[in-house]
Amino acid sequence: MIKHLLISCAIVLMAQPALAETVVAARTIRAQTVLTAGDLSTIEEDLPGTLSSIEEAIGQEARVMLYSGRPVSINDIGPAAIIERNQIVPLIYSHGGLRIAADGRALDRASVGDVVRVMNLSSKTTVSGVVAADGTIHVGGLATH
Image (cartoon, rainbow, N blue to C red; front, side, top):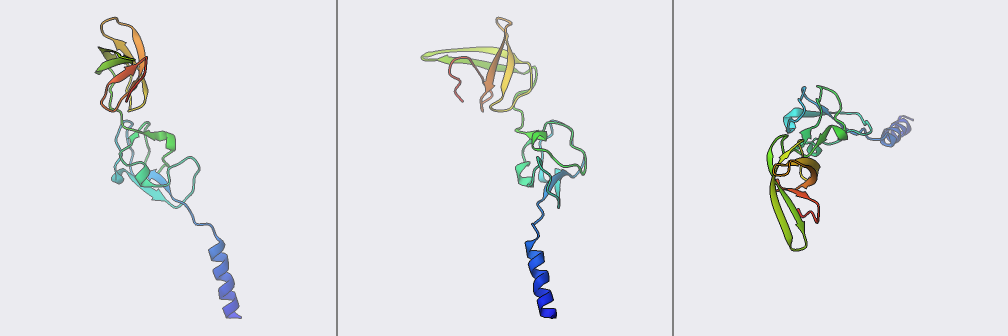
């Protein structure tokens, strides 16, 4: 009888779904802070739309203020910005064999792959371009990263 009860308990316990983990802020973290393992911890809870692994967040930048003990949403973090607002950046236009370079002033912060607005310093016109890994902004034509 006890043997059957133990087997029944074991089956019930095995049938329980494993609790997933949710990443939470270990302390209050300001927006634009690049996250490290010490900034985060996990809780035994499965919340939709949140991170489930600390490794997913390490090296990412907080897009908003993260409060201690609160879950970190997928939209709360992103790649670290390499372009700062008002930074002078090279603008590159490439199409076919034509390549034009000019200096511009970034109007927003941006990460690699983001579209950012930039004011061309020569013409004072505002253009949008894609941020390349080397920090150049590719506008119009064929953007090459």
